[in-house]
Amino acid sequence: MYAVVEIKGHQYIVQEGDTIVVDNVGLDEGAKTTIDNVLLAFDDKGDKVIVGAPYIAKAKVECVVSKNQKGEKIRVIKFKRKNRYQRTIGFRPHESFLEIKKIDING
Image 1 (cartoon, rainbow, N blue to C red):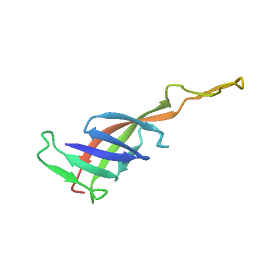
Image 2: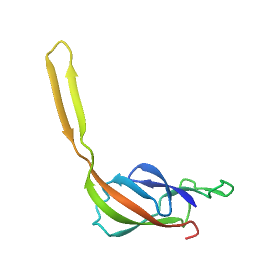
Image 3: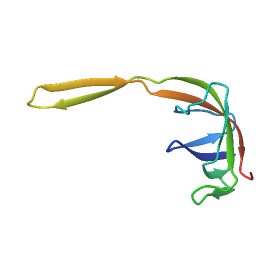
C-alpha cells in the first residue's frame, strides 16, 4: 500500500518501511508521530485507488523520527552587473528522517 502525504507543505509518496527526509518536524529522535494529511492511497498494481477531497477521512500514517541532522550546504549568490556588487551567503537546513511504520486508510 502506498500513500501520498502532505508534511509541512510538501507532498511525499510513502510505503511501509520507507525512510523519507523532510524539513525539521521539531521532535526528538525516537519520537512517534501521526500524519493525518493523507491525500491519496493506492495499492501496488494501481487497481484500488482512494482519492481524498482534499484529504482522506480517517486515514493516517504512523511514523518514527529516526534521526535529526543538518542538511547539505545551500549557497545563495546575489549579483548586480556593472555595479561591482557580488555577495555569497549560505545555510544548512535542519532535516528530520521519518521512518514509516504503518499506513492505515480506514482509521
